[in-house]
Length: 403
Image 1: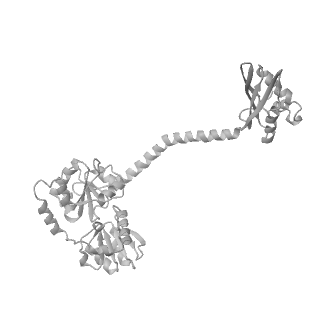
Image 2: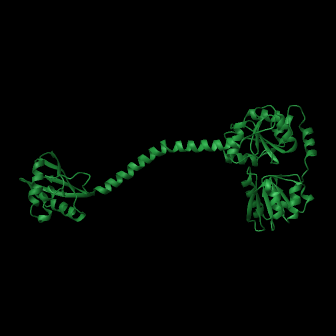
Image 3: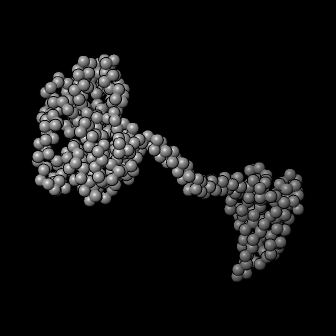
């Protein structure tokens, strides 16, 4: 007899058989061919269908228990859907097998293609999981390596001490001093390009020179070692602000969100010294007075409370977005962003811009910028800090501390 390969069968008929007596497998197969012969016409004669390969090998499984038999009949078919259903119904006409009464009931007609599709889906899931577990991590490693190489290309050496520093260290009005090269790289990774590393805990001359002419923020690890560095550095250089990483974490390992949160929470150096018990020499108050002479004393900015709350909130949100970017938002009187420019190009752009209502930027408000803003009719300057008293200009000046 012809056989149908499981590959070519489209449907499989599953039928249940119950027999009132003990019979063998060949008896069931014989009854199937014998009792359906001539029932469906020449075109659907089971023997002819099997010879031509349109019906496969009929399989029967029989179990006998307490004088009765039951089992399953399996019929593979490459006929179409309707013809297969007819064959399945014809099998149910068998009522006797030998001397025994029998009952045949088709349980289901299985669409082999659906089963294959289900197999394909499940197998594809397994293969995708293997691909994800084994291949994609390699791709991620390549991405990380390339990104690391780019950051390594951006890092430069600064001063005679050849300290590791970001590319914006010279042009920035503010700098962030960290402990080492790994800290600088982590800040670079998250877009902060004005950081410089001390390469240890001792104070390099280059850091002293920077502190004398720029606003300097010291960013240390969140441990006891960080406190020791604060004491060492603030005793030997004119530091303005201090930041500590979250407790127990190092600057080189913290996330972008943690970095920005830390930058927003920076404190004045005098407060930092008091928090760690002074500088050990009883000079905190004296240094505070000297620092006040160096900086322009800035009274409380009372006009902030007169501004609409939504406007103040917008200024604060934009300023937070710009932390570490060295960028500036140029706004119209509807608080719409007209453009974003680098802080280093801000004054040049102001000369050619008109109808600018406000500028929010990641930097220090100084006299040159205020003069350029006054000439351009700007109403507000919003920066990280300011060297100008609000009373010295008609422009509304806001800084991070006002929020």
